[in-house]
Image (cartoon, rainbow, N blue to C red):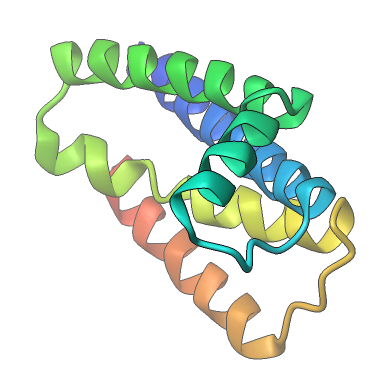
Length: 120
């Protein structure tokens, strides 16, 4: 049963981070950090549909993490969620068309091996 909330955490957190990236790409780089400019930027970001979706996905992830913690110890829950990094790297490559170096893929492989140790 612990694998269901874990899968929800990995999928929803990855979706949230992907949506945040898309939202901020749409918004553009922030260069003006004066209070008035920050207020305008925050208003625009808060109205961005990608960012709104990201907040919703983060909320789902939070709830699933609370469920997972009610079932498992923290020493399992936190390392097991490292699957987020695997899915996010794949999404960055496929959806965002980012270049992912072999060193990053090697890091992803190390994470997969670590998760494998936890599964036993």
